[in-house]
Length: 205
Length: 205
Image (cartoon, rainbow over all chains, first blue to last red; front, side, top):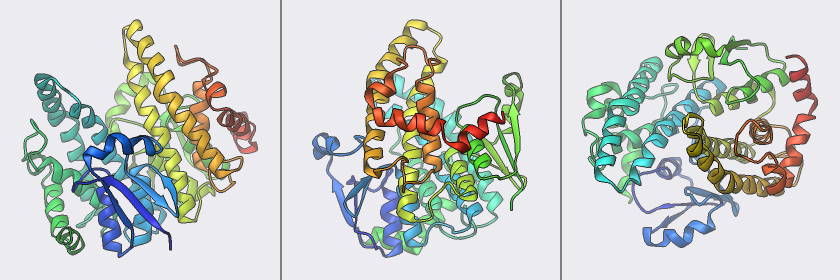
């Protein structure tokens, strides 16, 4: 096996969280290196792309959250072997990134009116559109999970996003946005929250 | 094998091109469905996310360019079997997307002075930064290719980006930006252009 260290922020969410949960579910030992917000300014310059997560594999730093999710997913049995199922798993993970990338700029908006307008536009536009798309993908998979009727890193990725959308931490995004626009995706969120491996991970935090 | 149709724009570049080249190199039959710019406005609404490329696998539409690259790379022998090498291949592909996503908004800028300022800032900033990063990755792989000393879809992805940067089609981005900031990446670009499978693909166009 590999010697693994995962660098990410010290909170329960964001781009590094799916890999932490997947490693936990897979029972794979790793150094869970959490960066306090106050350390970030200096720690940032030690990362390859001034961003986290970074996974150190046998001492070599690797970037890109979905690449990391896929790798730890393979190690932990949360990534399909079959090429077509793997494609679908990848599609879902990258689609979540698509919509996250659209929301990220609003975090840096200083002007509250500007932020409000941008968030409301996203809530009615891209976020709703992607939720409806994930609803269709769930219908396509005809099961409880996005791919192949098994838990994969794609489920973790969507869950973390929909949990965040429903949490009330995103100002001006209605907390019922998932339930209202994509009821199957809301059920998926609740199913994932109740998943034994996910529950065990958070119980151990 | 699968019945494949790839929908993408009718030009030699962009997010669908790596998959077309990879399918050609792998000798994999597919319906190379090219969308004329004039058709896009109506064709767009038939795509799952109002975007291309879309790969139809046995009639099912799948989105996300790097997911598609990975799938066709696996089919065509241009994607590593080893999980760690696969991680590195994925890292490179997603890093190219990182920087492409930063440049895309400039394509829609109507004001020429605004576009000039944005492009110049990117050329001196993110584009240069990522080129230097790819230079480091090439040094890490100690070879002619990004991963495992073999041609992969990661090489195709970087090549298409660096060829575009050097082509003069991106106004206000100096055409020597690759050669000046990342000489090994420039050599990689020229090596890829001379790769038999790549040459054969373009000879057949």
